[in-house]
Length: 247
Image (cartoon, rainbow, N blue to C red; front, side, top):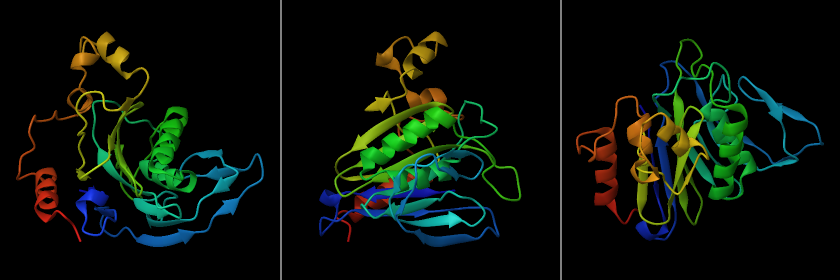
C-alpha cells in the first residue's frame, strides 16, 4: 500500500516544501524515473494515454516522473514550475469504470499542464469530468481502483479525493498532510463535484449539505471519527508531528 505526505514551508527548518511518496506496486513491475522536456504542439494534435487518446494542449511543461514502465502515466512526479503530485489507490462504494484515464495518467497530465498546484488540480478535475477514471491498473493481473491525489507547490497543497465521477478537494496552507489509501476528507471540502451533494440527498445518504460527509458516504469500508495511531495513516501522521520542523 502507498503513503504520500507533504510538509509546507512553516513546517520545515529552511522554509522549503518537502514531499514524499512510497509506491507499492505489483511484484516484478519495473518503475522508471524519467524526464520529458517541455513541448509545443500544433493545433489538433492528440496524445495517447494508457488507454485513451485525448486532445493535446499547445504547450506542455517539463516533468520528471516515477512511472511503471508499461503505462503512460506516473505514480508521482514534479514539473519545471515546482508542482509535485502523487496518487493513492482508493476503494469506494462507486463502481469502477471499464475504460478511462488511469489515476497515474491524471498525475502526468496535471504536471504537464499545471503551472501551480491549483492549476494542476483544475486540470485533473476537468479531465476526470470529461473522460472518467478507469481501466486496469496493473500489467499482468486485474487491479482496479479509484484515486486520491496530493498536489503541492511552494505556497500550498491540495488533497483531491475521488469516488467514481464524484470528487472533493481540500486546500492545505500550513503544516503537514498525508494520504494512505483511504478517503480522508470529511464534510464537503473546499471544492466539490457540482452534483455530489444533490445526488447524495436524492439517494438519502444525507439530508442537506450540513450533514454531507464525503469520506463517510463513499468509503467502501466506512471511516472512523478518529484515526488509530496503529494504522498506516495514523503512524504517518504521528511521525510527521513528531518530526516537525522537518529538515
